[in-house]
Image (cartoon, rainbow, N blue to C red):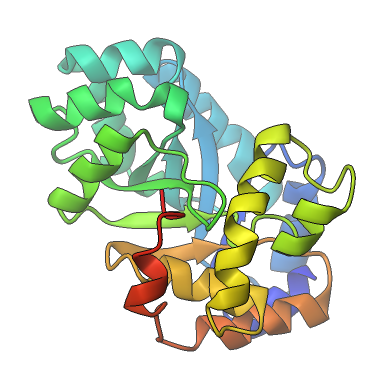
Length: 254
């Protein structure tokens, strides 16, 4: 799969959290270093020293000298630093200026949205964070409403993760255990009728058209272990159509 993605010329999203993914990717990169793609890497939160250590932990097995996009998470000391601004965030800027990271994006969840929202409004993210990355699909939007509205109002760049929600909506609705959390099954109950009335036959197409309906979404991060599923994702990613206005106007949207 790593070689297949390299052949497709895609960016990659990875993390030490994904078991031996770094070693697998590093092995594939070593076969032809000229084809190493831009990488989005989870760096977590904590202090600038913690983040610097996480970068080193990832670069070693990947066999690369830098990360295109470092994905920060506003938890622990980083959440406090976002609120305070000043020297701790300057230390993160130095990491970027040294070339270890090309740019930073900030991951959001509903329960971590308060600090990014306050930091954004205070100007603490200026010159540090170039975009935001969050779950964004027909069943999940992992930014609190107030933060989401602020991002849209500021025309912020957003990377959408978990493109197709992990499974087709009817499976999440109808198959016991397919939805790994109860709220997803309930959300699938709400969204499945909208999908079925939309005139879009394919769930993957529906999900891509959903994220493209938000102009601020500049990229989407899908996940699959099968080449044929990757082909489906690529096919839909090359299109540019959005959902019809009447579908977006239905009360199911978040």
